[in-house]
Length: 156
Image (cartoon, rainbow, N blue to C red; front, side):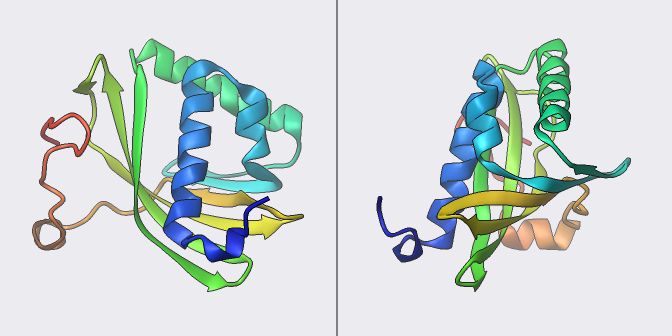
């Protein structure tokens, strides 16, 4: 097993995004579930839920997959903007999510803030906030948020 502490916080966060994104698109619940610690807190603009057990996580997974399918989403593209160690066993990370259909961007990208912790030798997501306030115009201009989608070249 590689020394996870020697890897950057961004690399750890990117790996979890890759695993969970692929699992969501392919329907691999086991791979998805392995990336999370339970209980897990998820916040959206509608409120906060605490996913207490694997059955609840499966319901969330299946519900999100169904919504993605109904919206015609064929690919999740997510990029870590910032990830840093808060302690040797905790990472705070913000990533941007793009929802694509056949290579075209369907919705505006959105930020997600996550806490990742080292638990029993594995890095796992313990909470995610999908209700992060979008950037203001000045901040977007400064940070380059108006740039094309880095993968497909589509405008936001």
